[in-house]
Length: 90
Image 1 (cartoon, one colour):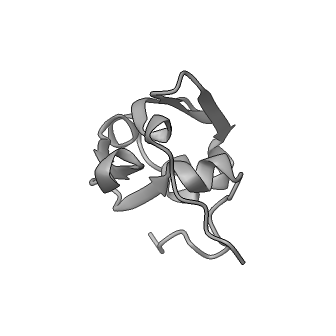
Image 2 (image 1 turned 45 degrees about the vertical axis):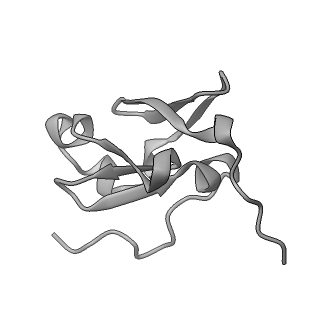
């Protein structure tokens, strides 16, 4: 199995979270949009918690400190939803 190294343009520029989806704008001009249902912690978070995100991982990740959730641009580009059972018990 080969691991693809992230490219400079795949860094996070902006993040938008709605009740239905998460969209991540990349520096190379692409926007990745995936269903929010793929990420149960974000799905069950409040709008304020979803809005409180930070760029992480040298620009290749997103961190939500209020819910301790992390996503990478590589995982989003590969279409990788959170593993089943990844949501923390409330």
